[in-house]
Length: 486
Image (cartoon, rainbow, N blue to C red; front, side):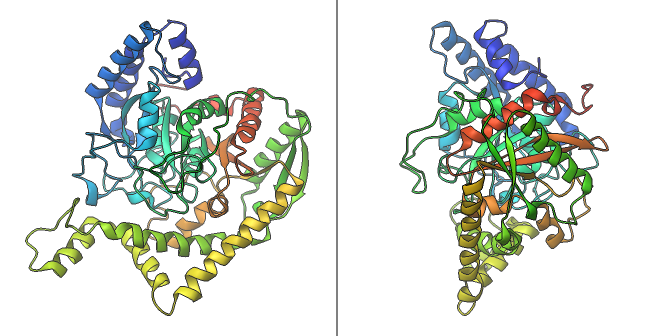
């Protein structure tokens, strides 16, 4: 049962072949027996999940089933969940029990989804390997000596290991797409503003965006259909008519133009990843698409621009965690300044402290114009490059990650090298565009992800392209030999 996609499980539920309680118990049992090796969950909500499953079965018997009725999912531990710990992977929030649901959680609960638990993540979503979590690193189910990517590594590992059919994630610089690529699943970062950020603990407010992670593009479309929508509680939420992401999944690709940016194929890129990406393009051509060359000259500046803008926003957002109102508080402070200093130095990990320091420096008097303002100008250049590229192409195709999953600890002490893991994903966040990573092959038994980037509000189009590709290939069907699965 656990091998089925979310879409297939929905069909089984709708057809009365399985109950929500049976499904929920299946995945809870897998989490209990297998997650000790993966460390993909921070909190497992066993009793709550069973109560929700029973309620879903009752609603279905009355003809009141929502779109996701009875489907078990996991939430990244960055989303506030009423009555359940929301830690954000940090000691700072280890004791925080949220008094409300994030809008994403509330929407999925209203649609009948069952929460299995909260997944592990890089602390405050800062990381590319899921090694900065206060609760320890998550392991990649394809090879337990390797990282699953970050910061949504717990969600990615749980879905890849079939501990949950789907999960929510967040993407600030690639944190849905990069772990999706490294674990062989599908992950979508929507257009900025289409999914509410209310109740999602902020890292970098102009970049953060929630999205779905699942086995297939059809699964992601099913989840996104529930997640989107205007939210008056979120000032960055866009007030527009919601699209139907399920309507055009099977649309033929004839007439589609796919752009291949030369900047996404540098000489330093592993030739095997480049070839798998080009083979993806050839498969789309076989289905009627046309492939053209496009250029994104300013993309090379995306990593330095991001690591000025994101830490600057983080330094502001994380100033609220001061040991006074909620969260971690140091023991026996001698005065208010000591309370602030020790609560923050003891409550935050090294990577979070590093980014707060960088961000505060970039925003300080005398350096704002030299760093932060200049980075924002580069951000505009990157957006303009994408706009020109979309004049020639409907979607843009490239690698998601410059490498397959790397060894645990390999980059933990080298932040700059770690930051380069997101070299192909960050530009999308700076421009606010939608993008999807899907499995496109394997190297030495490890998954390789390919990335589809769409123009603003074209999530339906990139989901359609990914779905058509997945109808012709089976990379998304392959699972790690973990827990007895093959």
